[in-house]
Amino acid sequence: MKVEYINPFIIATKEAFTKMVGCEMERVDLYVAEDDHPVKDITGIIGLTGRARGCVAISMTRELAIRASQAMADNDASELNAEVADAVGELANMIAGGAKAQLEQFEIRISLPTVLFGNYNSIEFPSETPALCIDFESEWGDLTVQVALVEEAEVAAT
Amino acid sequence: MKVEYINPFIIATKEAFTKMVGCEMERVDLYVAEDDHPVKDITGIIGLTGRARGCVAISMTRELAIRASQAMADNDASELNAEVADAVGELANMIAGGAKAQLEQFEIRISLPTVLFGNYNSIEFPSETPALCIDFESEWGDLTVQVALVEEAEVAAT
Image (tube, rainbow over all chains, first blue to last red; front, side, top):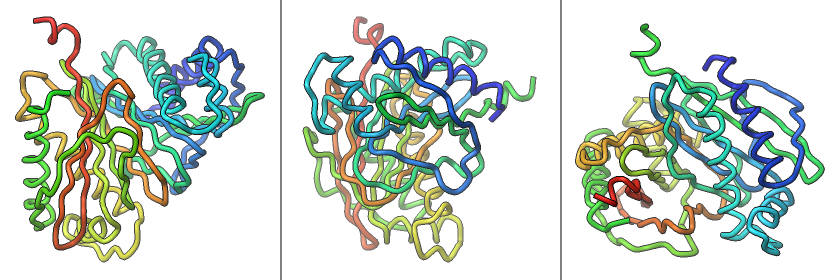
């Protein structure tokens, strides 16, 4: 994917956390994950289609996810449960939606999110489509956003 | 989601495994997973957009994934590596693609797949959208296909 497509996801991530969680996210690193895609305690995944196809995975620490759920749904979540999963799915949805608005040339549409939690090891993107990883830090914990986005052939050819 | 949308995914799963892996899949169960979405050793996830939004997760045993990779890519994979992940992602892509062709009223488009492996616990779909789970058995191992699909409002209103 082209590096210039990544900025909309960085902006959308900061906006989503500021607005919905009340938490400032600081970007600390940006890199291509080749073999080892870092995964934290809970991960939301959402698919992108349109004139570009892709996916976004947002992976965060347990504490950050719980704080996000408390802030977004005004609950007292204290463990990784279905309410927290919904908050993480909604954040993935908002980040994809915010980036989509900035990438209007691709007429992106967004799938439903899925959320995975537990002690798993790795997330793999299609090997011909390396994902870009963006690491963020905040007072409530760390977040990694991984994005893969490829232009559809008819766009690439124009 | 409506139960009648599930048959295309059952047919597409059987076709994908027969054609690409040379393996007959027998459907053994179909149910709504409420709290506990079963996850096996390796899981491929793909997003669906269009006049219906959704996602498909295919989760299978280690042996089945390795056999699928050997059959599809003519390799000698013996562990869950990137080649196996590609095979699982490609199977997710084929199942979504096969179902899409049978659900043409929704003009479905398919995102890139992501693949997760490791010892994780659970996969969550948005709580307002219960996913249907389809369990399959084969001589090489078990497979669960989970599907969530909701019609977009403009379709539902017609």
